[in-house]
Length: 195
Image (tube, rainbow, N blue to C red):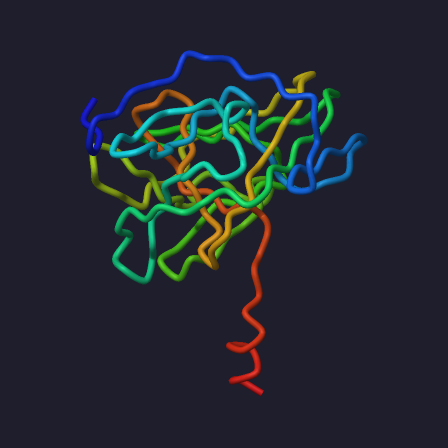
């Protein structure tokens, strides 16, 4: 496995029962897309890239994304909010490409093209393409297989501080998929320019 900088994985387990103004919890079937808590996120601490379980990511952590404006160069973005959904039954999709896979709820958007457009996982089909990052290279890979199951657990996603509201997610720590948080930031000044 070749990863940028000095990558390590964390082995600590964090359980948080306190909810602050930047952590949204919900129950019931409502809510946007999410990931299993065991999914891995590529983060940066000091000068090292570190894999953290989704459940270990905190507000203020730096996560890695790929910037479509700068030819998908790695970019660091701070976590603004955490959206955590209560333990219950969740439909989970496992989307498999030639080199990667990801596990997420059907409402979770994935990046589907070079224009940074996204589509909810539940609307993706075999043959559609998603962005896969492996060994310091990215590639648009076709979806080869989609599996579905139901789990009983909590699920969550992240909201980031920048306009690029995407981050890299992994199941195995070797291959990452570019996912959208499901939350958009609207720059009102940019929107007014087009009026």
